[in-house]
Length: 184
Image (cartoon, rainbow, N blue to C red; front, side, top):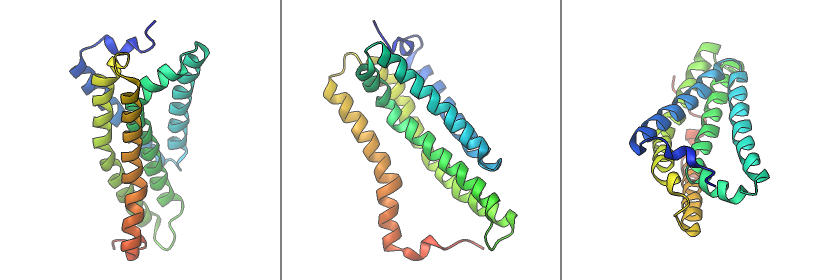
């Protein structure tokens, strides 16, 4: 009768710390495994996609798809988006190794590692927000009004969309020279 009762078995603060550390660990592994010709990143991304998909499908077969969707994506909007962005950072890392262009492989790897690390460090606050939402809000999803769940989900996706899509486009249009500039 309570599809997300798993959130109610630990204290909120301890769960927040554990979830946040785990999410940051998974994201950094997804990034670092990009060094293996991006294959490691793809494998971890696929594994996480299958987990989320299986979880949602299980609830769908029980007639609880909307309930689980509104419960999971309260924190999942930040969490899953951040894992996907970490995979992008891992692919960036691997591409520096695979496609050095006019640089040596080591130079190109250094450039791509620096770019990927910037992405990874920018994701940490989103993992903290996801851990907070998962620990303190998702566990109470049954008592929250439906409009507030939708509002949290849409606001979270909006923040990610702004920070990683809209704002970079604005900066790229304002400073086009930054698109091709690399440190020597």
